[in-house]
Image (cartoon, rainbow, N blue to C red):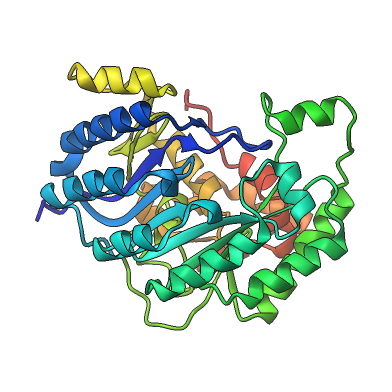
Length: 399
């Protein structure tokens, strides 16, 4: 086992999709057999570079669509992880599209230790699925969910989106009812964001639809209430989980959140709590020991760099401690528990009460924040506007 400074969180970006969704601004491309095989070989080279520094408590394969990889490609990656001694993570998540789930893939992943799958449902309304450019239909959602249960997965996440153009409150309620009836251990929801260089943004600019903020707020409130009624505990702005087993801490930063439900995503908590992580694959970001790097957002270049023995980096930065602490404060306030003062000091070396006293006071005065002797958190209203609240805690890199 590596020494105590080993990085305990690994993210792998699989940049391939059957087709690009209308809202997606993440780096991805349509899959071609030769390109995917070349990517797999390059990924293993990148894994080999970092393996000695890893002792992963959490692994997350995201995308793109990781479930688009075929059996042989998955076997190649999984055997490499085994060869490098990287199996056995307490939480190992793979993102799946309902259209690309198969019993053979599910069994293979399970056999190698994957124990959490995230199903990209987004909507259960056929019209909205088409509007988003999704390749699956509602029937495939239910078939895939049942297939994964039969394969032995006892920790499933369902992804949903709200504030989709054309999504009425009644349609959203119907989707929530059906999605919650599945009985997943985790629910992640995302409000549609209109990113430049996406078809959905172009449609908005062209006047094809308007953004209805009141409707988005109503849908969010409906989400919070219905998730609670279904026995899911909110632990982040729009992430909910069941609390039905003893908590297993898979990293130091995840293990200090007593208020976190058992089936919360430990991998994401590590991000929100400022933990180190390796990110592999095109466009992936790494943060290790105060240095942030980002890989090139081009699969061909990514492969070429690694084939020539070079790191596939596009950017590198090392933030001053106070600026990094401000980022950590901002991300951590996404969590319902907010920041315990002692935990923030342990993670960052700074006292939230000293460096950000004015910002906390401003949020409290606005009704967005709440402070007690042990910590600071956002109120329900503050969580709805968490991005605006978080901006107050950022510090210039010059500081």
